[in-house]
Amino acid sequence: MTSESPKTFRVDGNIDAPAAVVWGVMTDFESMPEWTASVARIRVLDGADPRGLGTRVRIHQPRLAPATWVVDEWREGEQFSWTSRFVGVRTTGTHLVTPTSADTCSVVLQITHEGPLASLVGRMTAQLTRRYLDIELAGLTQRAEAGGGN
Image 1 (cartoon, rainbow, N blue to C red):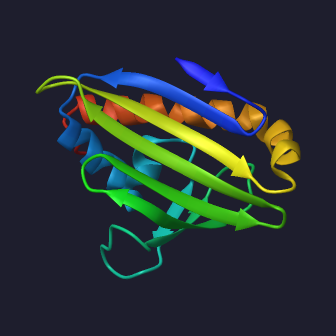
Image 2: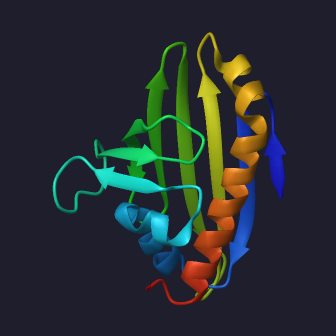
Image 3: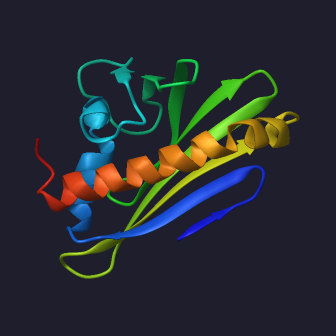
């Protein structure tokens, strides 16, 4: 299911894998380019394997300028959100995993733009944002349903 406004884009899905496996894939930041074509390169800026509140990552995505994202919400095993700032807009990416049984879960991926240029940025990047959310959900599903490994 997909829902959106000029400032918020969201995709929901169900994955046939335990929530812990999905969480593990989702939060292994440096492996993202292996399972989603929406990320070309990613580098964790805070050491070997930090995960959690305050973690900074540099993400290179096709057709977008490289951006530094900072984890500003972290609920272990459930949700993380990270934020990137650019002149006039603050963009937040939210990743939510909810168990639906021992072996399945639901996932929400959401991008929200805030600030004076949020509506403009949202409209200008809407098609690409929708596409990248769909690609990320598909890659996450495939990786998690294969057991989470390479």
